[in-house]
Image (cartoon, rainbow, N blue to C red; front, side):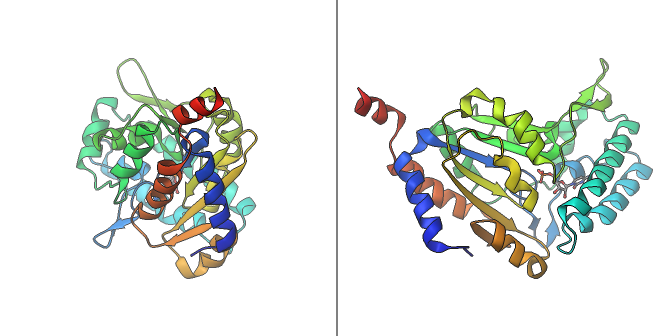
Length: 290
Ligand SMILES: Nc1ccn([C@@H]2O[C@H](COP(=O)(O)O)[C@@H](O)[C@H]2O)c(=O)n1
């Protein structure tokens, strides 16, 4: 579904003329680059991958599920405003991080937990990651999930390429490899603007790339591009995975393109193929300039 077809086409056409050298991709991770569901079951988020007997005791796994069941419906509730949700999201993340710290999670078990999990990137992910890397288009992954797990998921799928930058919640381990804290400022669904301004704006590689393809699954993700300096064209794609009828209107009013219960990267891949393949490449532009 599209908001205003002609405006979307015009934006894509501007981005295509500017080509790969002007482009950056900013994406959320959980339920945007990863699938929402597979075979009728939810695919775990990075936080939920930690909810594994290898890492947590039974009491811990029960508490973590209870917290998910309490706060996730609030996160996606179309009747609540961002302002109403914000303190509750901080409460959720804080409680879960405290719980994970109490569980004394071991760093050397993380890869194993990811391997055992049902985590899955969306169909067509390889084309997405490889194409961006091949054309040296930076991919900024901006996630309220757990950075260490996120990295492991993309590593185990063999797509952790050098063009990737990650802003997320990273674990801090003590000298024996036990989780003792989370590093830096907490990132959750609805404070991505602050993260964008304090982290993304400083990434040198992103300077002069004023065309943005933004991918997200919540309205909070739209703020991920707030750190882009001098943006020219921003095309936003929203994955509407859950509570479709309740949220359809707000997604259509907020994202340029809305993908409903689409577990693939087909649409972002088609847009990227169009922008990257026929646009002005770095080498071509240099030749033209000289
Ligand atoms: N304890 C938690 C906290 C959050 N989540 C989900 O993870 C998503 C955050 O990651 P993004 O990559 O999407 O920013 C968020 O949407 C929550 O639903 C969780 O599962 N457990």
